[in-house]
Length: 351
Image (cartoon, rainbow, N blue to C red; front, top):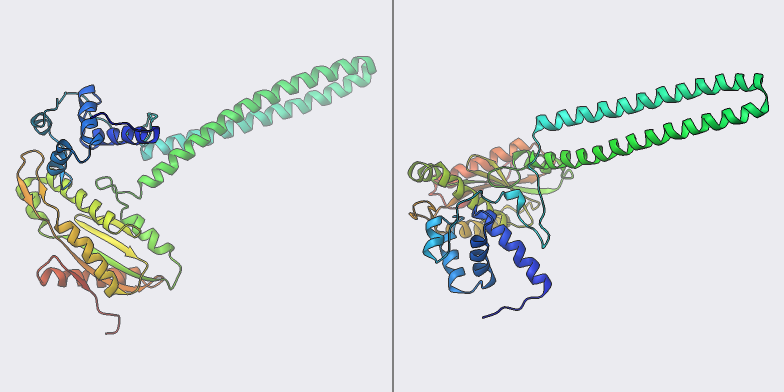
């Protein structure tokens, strides 16, 4: 059946095809585009449902999966994640700069500005000296010669100013590019590279920036028996499971800060001091995680359900964060001891 779409739908489909190829590490070959189009253009069709069934749990398609569904898997370089097509126009992305590279570029930029300013100072000094010498010469030569000399000096200064303007414009343009790169690096420093979630630094900075006295609840979540997943299926599969769980938590807790705190732990921040209410909300998110059925993409072996335990502690911003974290950790320990796959609130301070 031929599908008729307006321009906006085409743009959206085009962007989703690019994201599909990047997610499954497929090279930008016509065969892969064709397969992605068949999947995404008919989301309720049998092919799309088959793909959904295989990829549930964050598992990427393998060559065997694609060929089993009638597609053609072509060898080639995978699509880079930062080159995903976001609209009808392809965006050429460059890798995030390294810290050392940014430091070197910043140093060169500063040195370039210093050189430009020093050159302009020398030229201004030279112009002043020439002007003083010409003024003395004009007094000796008379008015007629003085007009010619003024014209010569004015022309020379205009040329120098134009040259300086060009150098400043170039330096400013380079500074703007550098500022964008620094902003990107600053964002990368607050992002966990595996899950794409904010990291512990982002959590700490967000908490510390809250107005003093803001009611808050901190949740520390830990994946249950995660060591077994790594031991049985390997760390690569474990990483995929961890990433999928992080994404599920972020989606279920949209509007609240969800971070990877370290290892298989996630830290969540709620601007709500009612621990019981937050616990009910978070329990729904943990049920969404437990409902997923994970499968190894490489072997098609069923991993099964993976659950998460959580400990919560309520307080106010401005109080020592370490106390809240310690109380949440203690509640998490009780959740593990009580059988895992549950949410436990820490007692209020003083209770």
